[in-house]
Length: 343
Image 1: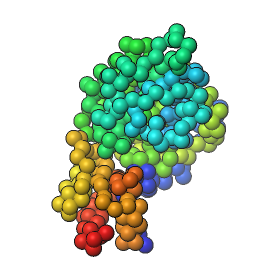
Image 2 (image 1 turned 60 degrees about the horizontal axis):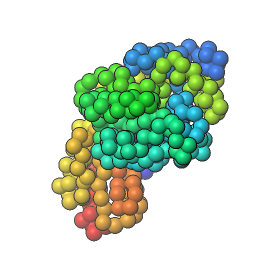
Image 3 (image 1 turned 30 degrees about the vertical axis):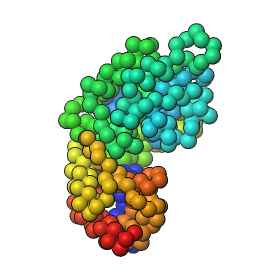
Image 4 (image 1 turned 30 degrees about the horizontal axis):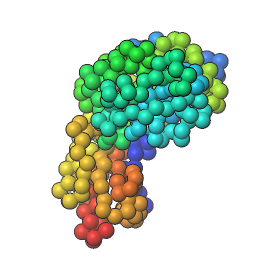
């Protein structure tokens, strides 16, 4: 059976151009810094974000982890939102690998609140607490509905952290969805922070990999931690070739995902599903179900539709390069049929 796959934008398939580029990529040993395609990707990412350097890593989780390790010494603290990917979905690696103390912040609006930052910040000098040296944010914010942060509020939150002497890292796995939504420049966000992680394998369509950008000193530290985590790859230009196409050529199509997600949200609301309101919708639709979310997912799968349970009675559907307007209509028809059957 051929499925309509709305589980995530991680399920995207590489384009024919990406496959051709991977097959013909010039490669070398990246641990030695000799892979020309990886170097080209890193140089392009640094230029695009206005950062001094960039590092190609295996995944967004690895990118966030090496960033935490590069900014924080063991035993220090990092402020992060309780709804963020770094807090909820990265296997607790900040604590058990990086050895840093996560301090939870209220990020229910998509950004950590100023009040929670001020309340949670711990300065040096008090032996009872882990000194907080980093603020980690997420943009777009997945669990808040794929909510993109505007540059103004984003910059203000980063400035508060900098005023306390902290560094700021942003999990920008989907940062170009925010850029596409507002029509601004990624430098507007990158210029507010000390490091940024950008995923190449979600809406941008590459088969794997993320890029981390920051200062030269930061990238030097991150490269060492990438190696320590087993992320030092050899002829990785084969994968980086697809990432280069993703970063150069695929950013412009993200607005299509947003349009399809809005159409899906409207259709599901008309059918009678309780769709979560998002002030600024990008490529995600969350809705509630009275029954078990996993059961609804199973029923959909039997009819050729893959959706993502996202907690008790909550479903997530994500639009991406593999989903067009016809797929949205067919998905809505399947969910309408299931709802009419009383499931």
